[in-house]
Image (tube, rainbow, N blue to C red; front, top):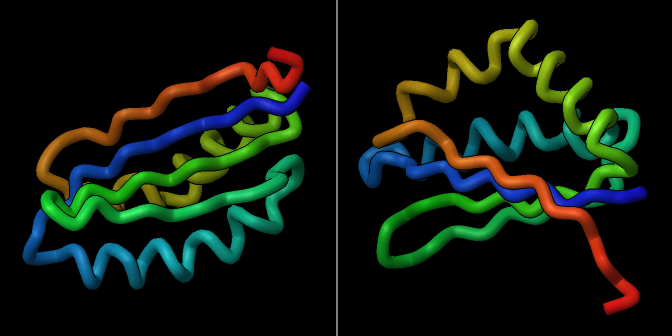
Length: 97
């Protein structure tokens, strides 16, 4: 069953442009990763916070992806662009409600 994952990235205002450039490159691989069905990026104008809304074929697919991202060092590279830790949430999709 597909799941929706949201990740809020509290980007530092002075690094927002660079952070978005890094995400633009990284999300090419995300969108082609096994189980990724969709990724959309949103930026809150007033804060510069970046929200990713991801649809995955299953929670296991998303967990495998995150493990791969940790192993390849992307998460470490992103840290310098953020004011605080990202906030990730996983939702079951209830299209019948």
